[in-house]
Length: 371
Ligand SMILES: Cc1ncc(COP(=O)(O)O)c(C=O)c1O
Image 1: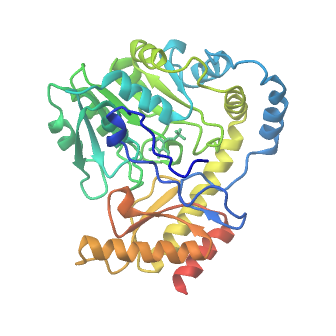
Image 2: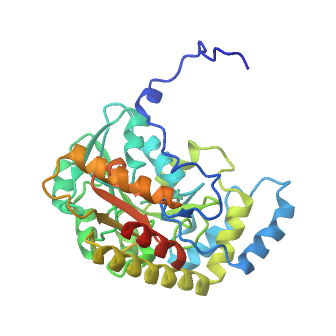
């Protein structure tokens, strides 16, 4: 390799705007490291689903079905949304970014709450669109302020419900009333990545909007409750066909791989596995929240498989002091083999976002806080 790697390549200006995605300490980590930073859930893939995926591996000498017809058919049966109004993606991020690219460009405008999912800022950065980040009201979306931020150039408004990183969730009727107020030429994307964990707004609660509003998308993923994030599969339930076709036009033809399609179908055939995973992560989450609260943390009302916890003693500290405090705690936990996310990187310093772990991992985390 030559010593000087400087090239004379000329890059697109969008590259200067996009920050690299944090790699959570790297992924080739020793087995004992507790991965509590990415909201994945600790349970390994169910052995039955593993066997189905392993058997399907023999077919990977062929391209995957570009229409994902079996998976699409299962989703039609489950949600009652027409097949052509279901968009699929290599993870829901793929669909999110494709939708951003299909709708946004310089001069266009994007609205979302902040702090929310760290990929939303990429949509404006990639496309050169303007954006408005609307501050949360406490830890919850301020729907009135989101509405007020919409202007004639706005083409996309995002509501993350349940919200990452705060874990809070608005009831379906409030989100539906909001969506009805948004002008019909603005796409309303409701990101429901954690919807299976919520008892405030569940997976069926916003489905009626799909029939009512052609500009609505419910974004879903198999990464979280279903535990398939390593395979990358997500989908959107759209109020109309046109934006689905738009997102398909700007992506490579075979974006959803064969094993991902197979695993997603296998999970949909076995709803009891999903129920077990959700139940065990909710139990773990409640234990985690209780353990943190007992240690002086302030935990937001979590409707997800993670908690958003403010460190004790943050009141009255300035931003720099809060960043220092959270960094020290993240480092202490890392030294004990526990990875969590620092709030500063997610939009609010002095907090940690902690995903559920195994009972042993959670006990290690709490013991490290006590040490
Ligand atoms: C709110 C939210 N939306 C979407 C995603 C993307 O998930 P995936 O691309 O794995 O489907 C995540 C992942 O963390 C998330 O937190």
